[in-house]
Image (cartoon, rainbow, N blue to C red):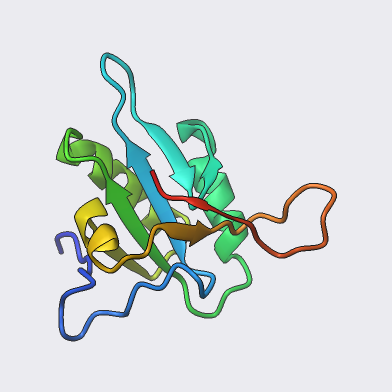
Length: 128
């Protein structure tokens, strides 16, 4: 079957909007170490990615996830996150580059996790 993914520049692709509850998994390169991962702005260990994504998407009718990664990563690091997304019942997975995000002038993402001790649904932080 292959790997079906979207790019935000494709004509039939869903649009990436970090302000609408979109889930973006960031794969961050670390020299001489395994990559670091974030779900939007929240650090998540690799071992917890699937359970966190499953939790996030459990009650969402539309399960779309975007993946972004540093240029220095091996594609297998990104493909691993795509596989984890599929195992978490994500229906659509899109790939975006950091350059695309900067080009749009969108440098903030929304956290899918409530801030501890706060009734707010989300927080904003800079996308690295």
